[in-house]
Structure formats: structure tokens, C-alpha cells
Image (cartoon, rainbow, N blue to C red; front, side, top):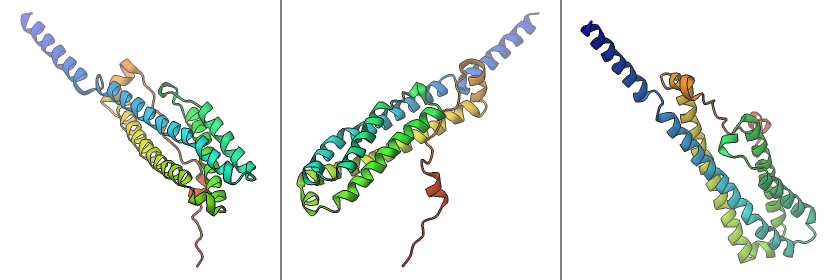
Length: 198
């Protein structure tokens, strides 16, 4: 009877150590923390871009006041972008799609603003405008880097919650769902290759 009890105790310790040692007890919560941190950095960079826009609009307004429609579009797109907030615990395909749409709308409005600026040599020569434009370009690069880090963090988290053996621990104890990735906002542009004429 003692031998049977010792064997059962040994098996229990062995199975428990296997379950607790690499099956998601620490790795899934750690990965979730990484996702939340990466998402916070994405939001931080989008906020930085949003904070730069009023200064940019004011400088353009002074030099190109009759471009009111473009300036209004930028201001409205910024307002929509700042109103659409998604916290890390609200990440679903639907909320990600809505967030991506408003950010894409802001990017599009900013692109139209930069086209308008090309028509005004005095504005392009304005040192304040050039400084803001450089900051905005740098912020766009930071957004890309932050999104890439988020994508990587999501991939690692999703692997942990869907690939055995950590997915077994998740299914039994944590029950986390996969997190959504950023999607290509303009699929039509991706599907259709650009035509280049010489």
C-alpha cells in the first residue's frame, strides 16, 4: 500500500510540475501584458500625430485660407480619430476595424492637406511648417514601428492561446480568446497592382 501511495504521489508531482511548468501559467499572462503594452504604444503614437495636427492646420490656414474644405476635412477626421478610443481589453475584430477606419480617414485627410501645401511655395518655405512636417513624418514612422510591435505581440499571444500545450492550460483555466490583428485598410488597393507608364 505504501508503494502505491508513493507512486501515486510521484505521478501527481510529475504531472503537476509538467502542467505548471511550461503550459501557460506564466507565459499567457506575460504575453497578454505585452499585447497591452504594445497597444498602449500604438495609441500613444496616434495621439502624438493627433496633437501635431492643430498646429499644422493653423499654419496652413494662415497661408492658404481659401483651402477651407481641405482644412475642415482634416479637423473633422482628427475629431473622429480622437473620439474613437479602444482599450486593450476591448480589442475585437469590430473595434479594430472601426479604429482602423477612422485612423485611415485621418491619414487620407492629411495626405490631401499635403497635396494642397504643394501649391503654396511660401508655405513650404515656412520654417514652422517644415518643422511640423518633419515631426509628422517621424510620427508616421513611429506609428509603423508601434503597429509592427503590436502585430508581433499579438502573434505571440495568439500562438500561446491556440497552440498546445499552452492552449490546453488556457482552455482549462484562463479561457482567453485570440486577439485581432491590424488589417489592411484598403484591400482594393492591395489587390490591384499599380500601373506604371513611362
